[in-house]
Length: 333
Length: 216
Image (tube, rainbow over all chains, first blue to last red; front, side):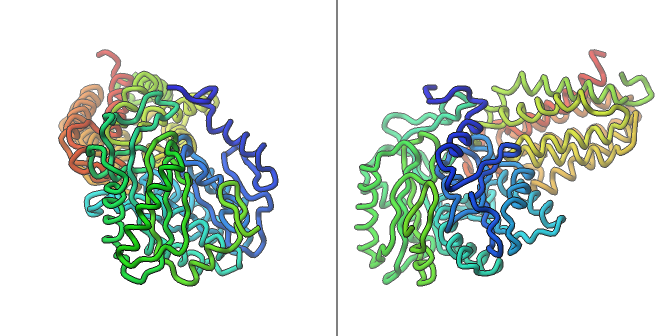
């Protein structure tokens, strides 16, 4: 394992120290327990948005804390969900009196820890709405699994609901916007290489030089199937077909297309993927009216990408365009 | 440690220390099992949690087994993370509720506590037998202990039967297709791998037997 770290046991703490040093204008960092809040939290009268998950997916979620997006993020250990005491403390720290939305990715650990946290917060009188993101079409039969994983749509939800909260929309409405984004977003990922969890020290999975993992999750957990390497056009066709057939997106739809790098993928390749995706969608009469291209929900140094499509309403488009000022996403300010 | 009067507070502490050592020894093994069908952190997370438990043991006031279990449960909830944190945290919190105010605990107390713990884990994780989870080791372990006590076995024999049954349950997860947790995303590809959660649960019941029975 070759990584720019000091000690695997300290990576999360040292990362937080780096974030605090880099962005004092945007965020504050708590170390006991770990969480990151907006520098100006709590914002009175505004619904607070909190998300969280394992570390190793940067800039998600700490990089999305700031005006127009998240009020707090709870980082767990690498690829490990944070704990209820972190989420409870973060909830208290950012509650501006208008209630709190917990944005939870559908992973067993995240769901259970956030569930315990919400129980603790409600017991103390804080209004909490929990929203679960489950947009990964790679997980087919949810009857026999923990259900679809929460992946790329999470980023879009945090931006769109964050803008709604910034407009001081009420708790129920912000939570419903989250649920509507979830209902209209679909994702699929693939990996060219594995990542290595620092504390484990060796790659999570082995892939041959000529193999790819289709439908991979954001922790390097295996996906739909392992297959021989193909051209970008074929790979995008497989991913986009799975996504479009699932919602289904139809002729005349306006979508937000999010091409995400898993951490080890150059922008050159992401633009090649975007080009193929644009051609694919044009061929079906679907218009990309907004896009996001880059590495936003990563899996350490894993090479590969994910594609997320969100069907846009006018409200979603306006909320997406609204100003945002975070370390990972910034426009309009 | 278990001479007819039941299991003392000190015996429980000895077990927790032994289990923490077992987890530390098996940290790489559990992580390796998890990397095959999960996200390669089970051993790392459990070790982080039980090292935190060890630190708490020295400062816990002696004398109440239930209070001790609750401290362990809360420590695991706040340090393990992942699915293991809420599940093992709940397991120990339920052991604590079932043994509140007791020192020592009897074989019947342990049977009741184990039943409460397994129910708690099932309620939290919503797993059924055969889903390829820790429940697949815990349920046979619980049932074997209760059956042994009902048949009049002494505590050492019952604990050994409990551990043996959990071991069989753990081994029986190998051919199963996972239906819960991250392994469930693998579908059929999860078959052929031993479940890491069932493995740590087996180790838990084996360390109970080893500690409270000794080498007898």
